[in-house]
Length: 474
Image (cartoon, rainbow, N blue to C red):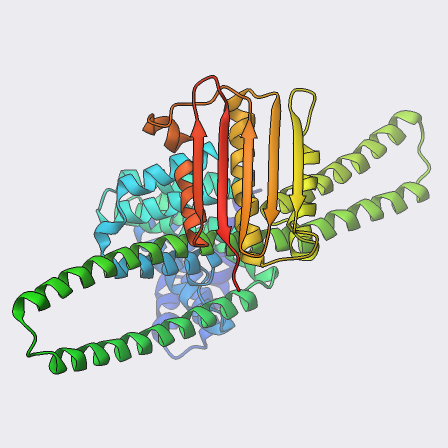
């Protein structure tokens, strides 16, 4: 029956619009209503797909989709995802510092760092960026591999927005390589995901993000224009300065500007990741958790109304309720790890205590001292400190083989200090491969983001001490 449905659909469409493809073509080229033209395009796409003329079928599918987008007055799905927003933001940042700033090796190194941290979200986003880079370079086989990896990771975390963007790119890539059958297959998957996203009513939030981003870009362009005008005025006023001094000042200016742009790129990546984590955590907490709780309640009510014929049926029904409950707890755990709700409500000290309770076991004894964080502090600094603590503790649990872990968090009038010390195996700081594999460069970037300082002291067999100092804003 599954194989007879497309033929029945074609027969039905041909009955409505004529008995041959010529009549359908006349509808498309004539003055028929848009809905009728869309149906005619879809019918011709199905006919050509049955004839195995996949290239022509794909053209008709795209034409029907264009009409559907115009009728529903929605943005195309490939332009309306939060991932697309992130990619455009990163693309704009890297565009300012030159295309050479983002390379294949840069993305591969980033992916390996995120893999060591089990950061599935970051790996999915970076695989998509890598695929787009390969596509620009016309390395289509590599591009397909990278974006398929992105699809797998996005599916693993149920990230529909990112899957939607990836399926669009896969359809385009197969079309460019001449595999039109695969292009149609991925185009249909894209349509299914786009319909799912529409039902979830997420377009309003995305549009708001996009509008905010575009407004920020306009303001940046105005500031850039004002800066250019001011700089030209200074050049005119200082034309009499000695040529040697002018060259020296120009040299220092470009060096400073280069460093500033590098900092902008790093900060933009960190801000984008944190915003995306917060958005996904909120969606999991507000949507998925509530749905699973509602499912559990409904199952419990149904169970009270059902008379089971034997204990086996009753046990199986109770197991189903338990599975829903375990799924609910798992979603809440994932949401908490990405952006703990208590961090937004009660502050850093409470979140760290909860984190320690989750990781403490018989093999590792954790001691925690906190002072000065009795009340909620700056959101950005608390989030950065929490991410640093997470990364350091994960390194200890994965690599150090420690039996004791001491954590100290102290805030006074001038500084915040965070120290994480273990009695584990330690490592050689001169071993760059080990250093990068543990994500320590990522720690340095986060500390730099809040104008802080980090010190790491470790030797093989003597444990590791990580000390972070952050100035308090006044």
